Length: 160
Ligand SMILES: Cc1cc2nc3c(=O)[nH]c(=O)nc-3n(C[C@H](O)[C@H](O)[C@H](O)COP(=O)(O)O)c2cc1C
Image (cartoon, rainbow, N blue to C red; front, side):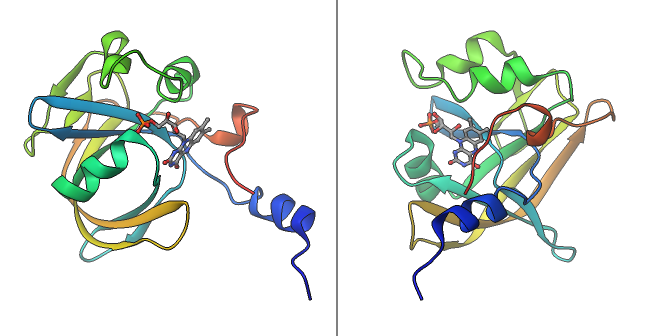
């Protein structure tokens, strides 16, 4: 039976998602992008799972460096999430409006967010237009706890 494309889209869009800024670094180059396909994958060791668009600029950096950061946005940071999915003049340009520091693993962590984690990739699955990276959480910095930004509150969709 052929896949019912409309039903598939409607149902997959019901999966709840947060909105995060994924940070990457390779030498002097940094980049960041908005990511919603992020979830926890294990308690022990603490694992997260992220799906990264294979054609995006950050994809190769994650494959090569095997590291990335996940910055957890507050519910009032929708505008910042928009900055990080729009095209940029040069790699890393999105960080011009978003001050950051480097974490213990050397990855960009936003100064203004709920907090951020740095992750080390342990496995990757590359069989679609996004690569699924499974990564261990190595560092965690909580800046100020609060309500996080959810995709459903933005009116945007990424999925289906
Ligand atoms: C709401 C929303 C959620 C997104 N979630 C993801 C995601 O989970 N993974 C991903 O690779 N791209 C996601 N994107 C797309 C990237 O943010 C976008 O392709 C970005 O330009 C990639 O940047 P880069 O090419 O500099 O890495 C999302 C976009 C939007 C609008």
